Image (cartoon, rainbow, N blue to C red; front, side):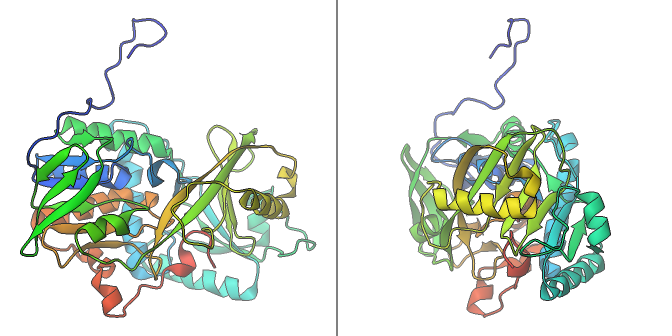
Length: 406
Ligand code: PYC
């Protein structure tokens, strides 16, 4: 690869796709940020024969489609502890990877427009503070000072009453994170196989023995399902049933504007969130589409509703043009928390159910799932995220803090 002149020669970020080997120690299904982070962490622990299989290009799924919000202001102690580990790992990631992932810790703000929402934010703030996470409830004057673009008058349909302000939250460059992990994993000897589709998983006497792919079979004793959107399909190949329903999630960006918004703003009543990227675009989204689907189509009703609600929240952006819109698909669990877990099939490990909250978790998920595989023991921080919690009827109750819902 060359720059404008051939004086600046750059090597590829990671190696060309190699031939598939007949066997690997660990096969990771899914070449998004989670799969790559697990591979990198395994390689760091000295597990060398690791292959990442991706049916399209690296980062083509949820990793390339999310709106890159990082935060740990969750509602349950289990959630806050886990996502706080992820935020701390993200803070060190540019240095660890020797690659600028453009993490802007500009602060995250969840607005409350009703008294009951204010109570919900107080509960979250308490839990965040008990767990050592910087979050507090702030009121109208401070909100106005931090985000002058918000309509703080009494005339909106839902006047702003208070907000949960979380200073360590912010936005990151999602491609940079994916490329950084792919590059470091590759340097440590991980094989990355784009355009390699998994078509079956072989199991003998309750133990994984191999994976069938569009490029031939592979022998392995360990398969990690790190897919987003299709995790139920991959799990079914191993005979494992997941309590997951898949929904589209849409987002859009505006034309570039001068910087005026340096907080991520979320409003559950208007069902929208807005941030401004380093390029000046407004990055905006709503809740998941209400129907279950694998479609990556973006829709006009989404855009109409987004435009209406964002301009109610920030009337000054009403005339701004939309540059593009897109969709991703999200694997929703009943409790809006992920599944990182061994399964009843020996050697079949899950890192799935990441709904609308997966990108922000990748460094912690990669580290802890690799620990689970390398040591054979579930790390304490992952215990609450087992698959079995659903059979035991012990859901986590994270719905109130995931994405913009409630
Ligand atoms: O979890 O912050 C979040 C989020 C925003 C949009 C989708 N997920």
